[in-house]
Length: 266
Image (tube, rainbow, N blue to C red; front, top):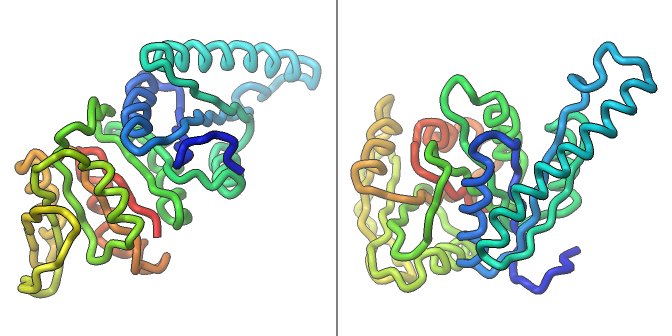
């Protein structure tokens, strides 16, 4: 499946909005950190291109758009890749965005998927595709960038974790992300009671923030994520079946948090 010699395949899902360059730049930072190969995937909806056109006119429109879109993609990729001397591949498809993304992910099974989080009232792409990804992916780690769409570096990063269970692979990824950083990892939890048990993690120090379950728990947690200058919040997907995952506080944290999020695959 993977023709590259890197340990991980990272797919960055671009909508070609104004934030695409910073999303791709952040993906490069992730690739350097974990030894990953990058592939850009972009889906262009066809409905707006062919509506009201004759068949011949529609074909001409699609051909013209294909050339234009490929040129735009290649220009964006070259701007980012030349700075880092890094080869970045891409795939362009047309059709229903959700269907094409679903088919691509089922076939390629990337280790990481990167996408940007749109600002409020501009989130049609985010709300439809991201919710679909979160509900259906299990083995892929998903990096959702915050409203500034940028992780300029993973060096000496302030990491946080949210979720009751972490698989061995999750721990391995977190260790890679915090490599050479002596800063503590912050644990954020929501529980029925304040937890007294101290978990053992393979890093030097963990600072815990536990919030009692209630209507304001997520707001309190998200507020502390910001107040502690957490730069990346890793969210455990392990131990949640699909129904529980959909009804858990995870979706609320994803929607309300303004920092980049890494949803760790099961």
